[in-house]
Length: 65
Image (cartoon, rainbow, N blue to C red; front, side, top):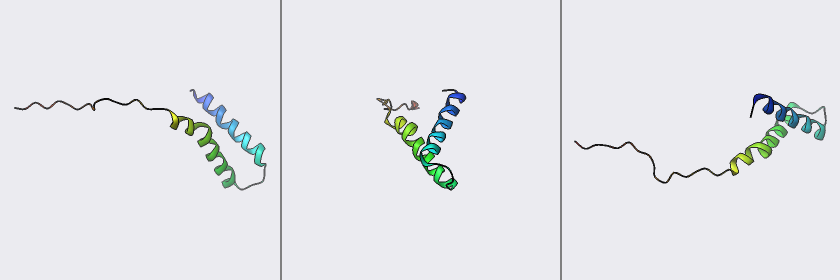
């Protein structure tokens, strides 16, 4: 994802929140709403992705002298 795509999505979420809760509130209200929306839209999806399991941990071999 490029910087322009990330910026486009961030601005889109901010505009969507401003339309839904309106103007004139404290900055903390918008910050909390943005944090929640970013989590729901982006981080929750990333957390659902499965990670590949490694069958055996890789360790350097130790030679006995």
